[in-house]
Image (cartoon, rainbow, N blue to C red; front, top):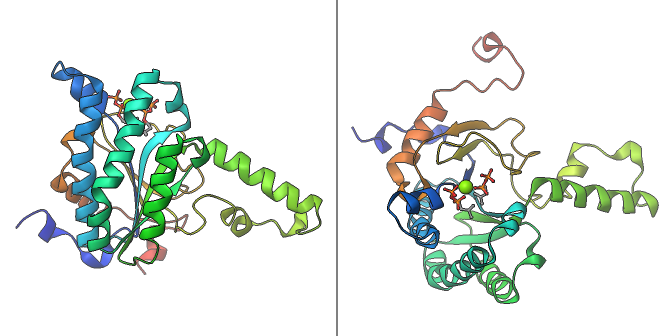
Length: 247
Ligand code: IPE
Ligand code: IPE
Ligand code: MG
């Protein structure tokens, strides 16, 4: 039986998020430039998007560029932005054919104009697609997102549009970049690092975390199936006892 056959399709994560890490180390291991690692990472993106669309897993969110990544060498940042533009151009047809909606979260205004325009164009064209929502986290940082949210809510309080006593979790949710997405069920990070790096801090409150040594450019469908099988063998208790869940 293949790994995929072992997966229980009734217990799939609804929202899968991935911290795609290890492109640089993958390249370095082979004496290649880091940019080759990033380029090779796009193959893994295609595989994982395809696998999720096949099930389907309705929400897939990929961490592609963090607010902190702006501090990388200028040339690397440029390479990543160029790669974003070329990937968007290359993948638009596949997104349409597979009925996938492209969404983005983060401080998108900080992106170079060309990348920003291309991104908005693809988002607009795929807007009515319904099979799956693919969200790219670009110039994304959870602290930036939460700060922005607090500012927006404060302004509404100041203008008497909302009273502080009415601020609850759903009000906060509705001001986040992820307002249209459900909570994350499974978060995968590749490359052996076991940290969150400012990704979806609010949204992963009850996510299952899965860390793997595989470097992102080597990540293939079977790696994802392994992670999903592992996820399906966990008991998500959400604060309750095991006995309550299995009376
Ligand atoms: C992930 O790979 C891609 C981005 C963060 C943009 P890295 O570039 O972080 O690769 P490592 O961690 O240096 O190996
Ligand atoms: C996290 O990876 C950001 C992305 C995958 C886009 P990093 O490689 O930037 O994370 P740190 O800085 O090592 O934690
Ligand atoms: Mg890294």
